[in-house]
Image 1 (cartoon, rainbow, N blue to C red):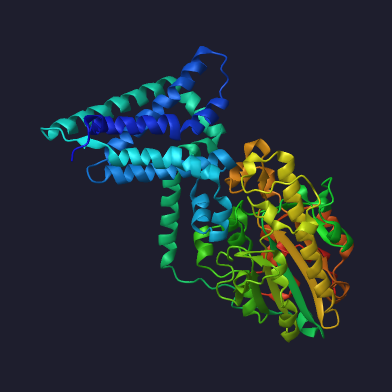
Image 2 (tube, rainbow, N blue to C red; image 1 turned 45 degrees about the vertical axis):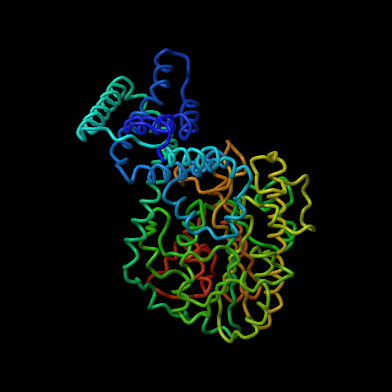
Length: 546
C-alpha cells in the first residue's frame, strides 16, 4: 500500500527539510547562546547574527547531502534526531558541554545514575524533539526520480550553492566568526549533531587505541624506607576519595554556613587552595592516582599504566579499595577491591543506592586482620547529583526548604543549595566516624586520613548545573575542591611532621591532585624513582631526623 502524496517527498526535499529542522530546533540553543555574545547596536552585527542560521543550514545541507544515501538515510537521520534531542536536553537543562570526556562519562554511567537523570521533563523533551520527528522520518516516502543522474546532479548543484553561500558569508564576516569562536570556545560544542558525534568518535578512537596496548608497569623498584621499617607500630592511612564536593561550600574554607561541624572539632588540616585534575570522575580519578601532573596528563597512557595503588603494592603495603560510586576508573583494577553496593545492606542501602556509611561496614574486621602497613581507599558517593536529596539522611537535612527531586532545574537556587549543603553535612559525619575509627587503633598503628574530592559541582551559577565542563573554561565551582588531612599525634611524632608548618602550607600555598601520588608515597615512606619529593606536601614539614 502506497502512502498518500502528502507523506512523500523527493530526496532533495528530504535533505532540505532535515537541514531546516536541525537548524531551527536542534540548534536553537546554540543560536540563542551565540546571539547572547553579540551587541545588537549596529547593522553589521544584526547581519552577522542573521547569517548564523544560514551558515548552519548550508553546512548541514552539505553534510546530509553527502551522508543520506538510499537505505541508510532514514536510520542515520533517526539516529541524528534522537542523539541531538538527548544532547540538547542536557545542554539546556544543566548547561553541560558535549565532548569526548562527557561521552566517556555517559558510557560509564551506571543504572543508578541513569535513573537519577530520568525525569518526566526529559521524556517530554525527547518525545517532542526526537521521537516524533524520528517517526515522521520513518513514515515519509522518498520518491524515486528518473533518470538516475538527475537527482545526483540536483544534489551536486545544491551542495555547490550551499558552499558558495558559506564562502560569501565567510568573506563578509570572517573576523566576527573568528572572534566569537576564539573568545567563546565552548559554544562550538553546542552544535548538533556534530558535538555528540565528534565526542563519540573521539571516545571510540581512544578505546580502540588502548584496547591492545600492553600494561606499563611503574614503581617496581618501590620499597619501604628505613623510617617506616624502624617503627614498632605499623602505619595505616585511609584515603577518602570524595565525589562532587566543591570547596566553595565547605565551612572549613570560610563558607558562611557550618557544613563541617564535626571536622572543625577534629583538628584537621584543610588546604584552602586545592584544584582538581578534571571536572568529572572519569578524568579526575585516573589522573589523581597516576604519576602524571595535570599539565602532562595523558588519558590514553593512564588507561594502560599502573598507578599509585600498584606502586604501594609493589612496596609491600597492604592495599584495599572500597567503592560506593561508579567504580574506580582503572585505579584499583589490579589490587583487592570491593563494590560495597553489592552487599545491599538494608540499613544503608535502598535498592542500588547506598549511603556512604556503607563504606565503614565491617571495616574494623579488615583492620583487625592487618599485620603490616596499609592504605585503604574509600570511594564515596558523596554529593553526586542531580538527586542531591538522596545523599543525606533525615537527621542531616538541617537546611530547608530542600529540592526533593532530580529535576533540579525546577527548584529555586536556594532549595538546591540547601539540599547540596545537607549532603556535605552527611559527608562530614561520615569522615568524622572514619577518624574516630582510626583513633581506636592508636595502640597498634600510626594513623592518618586524607580526604580529596574528585571534582566540584555547579549549582545553577551562570545557568550551569552538575559538572563535566571542559577544564579550559570550567567555573571554579567545578575545579576548586576540598582537600584535608587528619594526622594522629603518634604519626606526627614517628614521622617528624611539623604541624604548624603544614598548617601554613594549607593556608597559603596552591595544591592540587598532582600532589596526591607523591604525598601518599611519602606518608608510607615508600622509596622509588617515581617519587618526586617536591610534589609531596609533607616533605617540607618533616624534621631532619625524619
